Length: 366
Picture 1: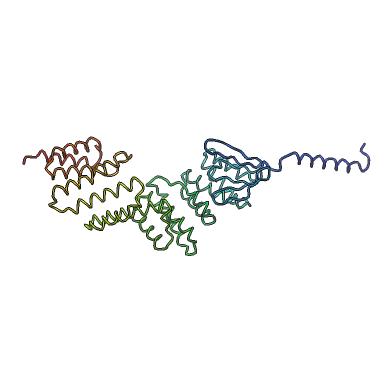
Picture 2: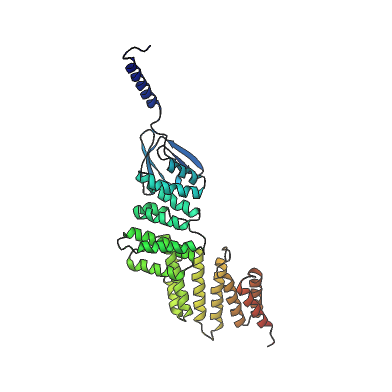
């Protein structure tokens, strides 16, 4: 039989035991799993401070403040954020639709600002990989407006060229750029991503117009790779247009005055081919043989420099022009050999058909 007052003693004993158990148990099982260079590392019993400058800052179990790049974080587990933790698990497993849904819920439910920011960044990537590019862009815009640094590192992957989602993604960015109160750094971020989308769409006209808007508004940063690439492509496009309009000197100037912009092999091939075309056009109807030989060499430089690239840009066209010039020089033997090379190496290219026509011209009775 329990004596009067003994229940109070028992209650105190239970409280003491509970406190002792709590002291022995970790305050939190929150953890960050890191993957870098093939190595895996886990920090247990952590507490996240914030996400800033592309880094997640957190306190270790020993109370030390440390940080890691966002790109190295494989997964985060939070005891009191089961929806977020499940989304992280799905993300790590490549279950993109499940991760997309989970992060959308985490953004709505979590009271932690850093969790909402992190979820928005992950959502932009997961939604893009799940095939929902429009949802990815919407999530990314929300994140980038609040945290441009995270936005710069979390741009959704672009769908394949020809996808209608590219058009809708471009419209979302154009609508966001209509906000007159948008800070300059955010404008630049949105413009450069819009350039990437337009480039993927193959919309040269829209790309050039966007780039010109950037430059006129003073927000274009040509140190940004996307902007620099787009600007280089615009200059090649303008040179090509000038050449087509018969403005040979303008075409040459567009390329020669912007040589430093052409750093990517595909751009260099386009620029070098335009130079060869403009130089050849400048010769007129009756050039001397030495000038024709120089023109042929200009085309062969395109062949020599870019024949080993995967798509061999302008190589077949340059070979055809070389064959035509050799024919003008009266060297039909060399011209025929070049035509045969085109037919052999580029059987499906329109240049192969023109090479066959040129060879028939050699063989026609004179």
